[in-house]
Image 1 (cartoon, helix red, strand yellow):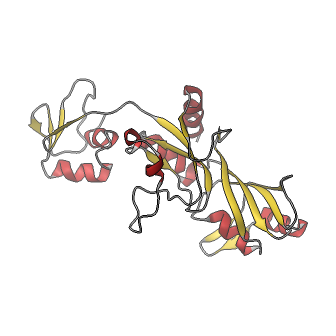
Image 2: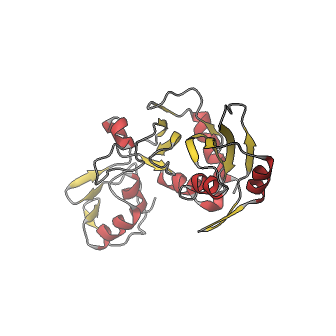
Image 3: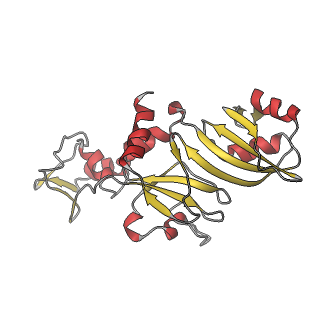
Amino acid sequence: MRLHKFISRSGLTSRRKAEILISEGKVKVNGEIVETAGVIVDPENDVIVVGRDTIEIPPVRWVKLNKPPGVLTTAQDDRSRPTIYGILPPDMRSLRYVGRLDYLTEGLLILTNDGDVANRLQHPSSEIEREYDVAVEGKVSNTTLIQLRAGVELEDGFARPTWVEISKKSRGETHCLTIVIKEGRKREIRRLMAAVGHPVAHLRRTRFGPLKLGPLKTGTYEDLSHRDIKALIDCISLV
């Protein structure tokens, strides 16, 4: 494994910052200062020290969280609003989230310390499906469904869901939709529905690729099974 990747996988810092630490002579491999980021190290046998600390790669971990509404997908907030890391125990604070959910959106959020797989899963080129339950204001007509399926021009480009259908959960003046997208642009579904005259009243992500939210209660989390992890990795292996 390359040295800067090892440092990043340890959870100490990002790859880019690891490269800077290496170039500044702050990293030792087996007692020798190394100033080249691309040096190959053996995670099982080499001793890597950054500053005064010996670092190791923790076991790979994958967790799914049912994020509540009113919680930020970030490590910290300058306005002291609650974040997902306030829900998680201390030993999960080094896990990174795979794609954000905005402040009011709830549902499935994946976290891991496997940065390489996380990056590929959320990269637009992987085209991983995200499925949402969406409650909107007003009754959605067939004309609006046709418009959504054809695609809508937003301020940052054309957006077209992979799938849109009216859910059986619709009641009264609130219509519920199932919407599947692949890009995952910032607030994409909220902007999409506002563009067709139906502001979102409630939004919940129920699926990311092959992984479903299932019966996981709001504000709780669980480790993924080996089967789930393999299914996620297989998604990007096929790209």
